[in-house]
Image 1 (cartoon, rainbow over the protein chains, first blue to last red):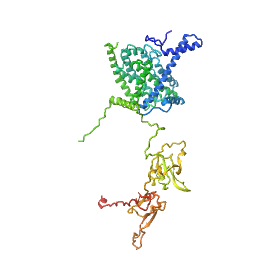
Image 2 (cartoon, each protein chain N blue to C red):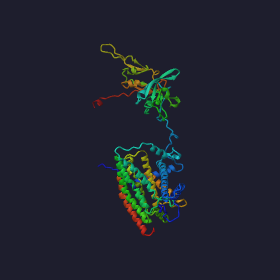
Image 3 (tube, each protein chain N blue to C red):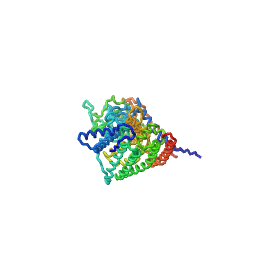
Image 4 (cartoon, each protein chain N blue to C red):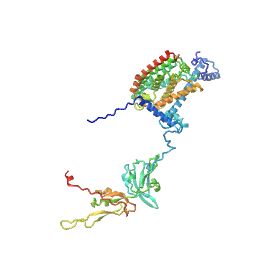
Length: 358
Length: 257
């Protein structure tokens, strides 16, 4: 039987995200005296998915807490500090508040589109991390075209956003959905072109290969600093965080395409935006900042140190910059980032053919 | 030709839009999170600000000083003060203002109007209650001790500008406490063509022992002949000399113009 978790780097590390679920599944099946390899495989897959979701959700909870605290310090105030130790359980209090709220279906709303987009957005956002390895010994899958696949899954959400905006039967939701589409179209292009420059240097779409290449040469942020900046702006626009949060601009549209979603649905959307932030930061760390490589500490620790550093950068941008107007968003995307990313590809190609990276 | 100075709009650019705000927020974060630094926020229920002495908080009444003049009740724009009889101890009652703090907007007009500095704005600002009726106070319920309120200023008393007085007696009719007597001035009666004398000119004479400084007479005077001037509390020796209004002389030229 083929195994999706087979290590492609040729080393003999144990993949814990396979090893632990497999052990549990084997133990359960042996207790029940069932000897079915297919069932073992399925059970392993389910337990590994749950483990991955737990890892993502724990990180998201810490992300929200870290963001609130750091944002407070950036704004000369203290974040939450009452609920729990240093306010850590404030998130749970907020989540509980969302849980007990009424769920409302707007009048004349399309119930199928209204509710199915929730599933699509949450599922697609959680799915990004399945193709993003977190360490050589901790990954769900590590496909050859992992980088491309990650961005393909990244790009599912705006379609669901348009559907959500249309199904809500609300002008603000619809405008938010349209804005999301326009923003996606203008930022996917420079971002993918920037990724191509990384791929030109590394010679692979596989995350592990890219990281190993960086550890044997140099972090791609140094030769491709231009591409790094373009990618930073584009990824912030892709995950719709504050300088580019035009789809759910609170000041202009009420809450954009999320206006009509109430209670736990809204909480899930908010959670999803942090899942996407986590995925964006992880991809950025992997393709530009050397991934999990680093001295002394285990790879997974280095990975999370870098992810939280990038997340702090996102929070810093959020604390400093005002929201960009929608026409400015498109202007920046098409007029500035696209030429810069093309120029970046030229730099990458020159570096490649000059023999500096081989 | 007048030179036209146009202020050119300062170009902000990428540096001003992106990097300067990022630098400012980074500086704030470094300042607030490093050792020794802390955010500007006051942790309210645990920490409280030191309020200035003239903070406009909840109202307080010094019952000893109140003269029952109703100035505060008259000036209050929200009608939150109402006069009532209340015990002052020893079986005595006094005419003093009661307060509905739920209506109060903390404008401080009553404090300014009070002639005897009986009203004060205290430093208490946590005035929330669950019931609106808890904020309605009888005079003794919102009373302050005299030592909690600042020192008493000299009472203002009505003074007469004789040059404006016509002797109409409006002040006498307005006075609630029999302070004013209209006294005739001998020898001011005009002689009528038929030989008889008309009424003599009258001016008000004040018995300051009875005066409560309520300024009702000043309000009543149609000719601006009365003004409230501070005097010492013993009304017999005036602190301030009576100031005559400078007489306005109209010359012929000004009239013709």
